[in-house]
Figure 1: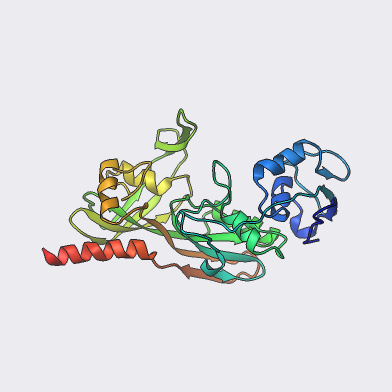
Figure 2 (figure 1 turned 60 degrees about the horizontal axis):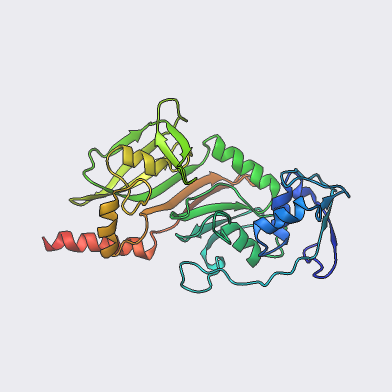
Length: 318
């Protein structure tokens, strides 16, 4: 059932493709535009039931389960990104079939709502594709990072993609601009990473002995006196891995507001770089269902390419 009754309770059967999905994600896919906090309130208040009984938001649903969903009224509003007006993500889809889609995510989009973000990529895509019953993130990108992001449209595709990312059977490469003097053409960073929370609850990562093993391969593509354009290849997929590894090497990402050079960032803003220079530009993996090799590229966004062009023009004038 894709359309829920607006003024009455709906009883929705869980299908084969939805088996194993968490109850909260199942509900969010159907209650388009409803804040996550409200969905949790409905579940905890007993208004949502599974097979006639109360359930936790973390419950994994089984094929054939019956979910009771109460009527919820929502004033649907288009997403707004960085104050530039309504934004749709459909024009940013670079690959799609019945099992998955790949999005060239714009910078400024969190992959999911929460922590002050009313609607993220996954909520917006569900809003734009109400006919799609299953839609889940296969991996993540930081809010400030642009580029290729994979979303599963079938559960078996999600399981296969999770295995591929976990086992390192994908090739993920990023373009980034490192500040400072870079040495060597290819450098391997193998600094262990430890996640922690700041006193304000913000998630951060630092290099620390005993942390999770992390490996990034950095390849120099082009250099200017104070910056270097680098391709970063992830061998592991740790939180903030590229950002922390480059900072540890003494060449933080231009515009990085967590691990970068904060004084330099203010100067860069005046020069036109108003975001972190990190873009997921190339992705290669085997299709989790068809076995086809998928190879995709997303060129640098205009604002990053313009900054590079400015570096070239300045260098040519010297």
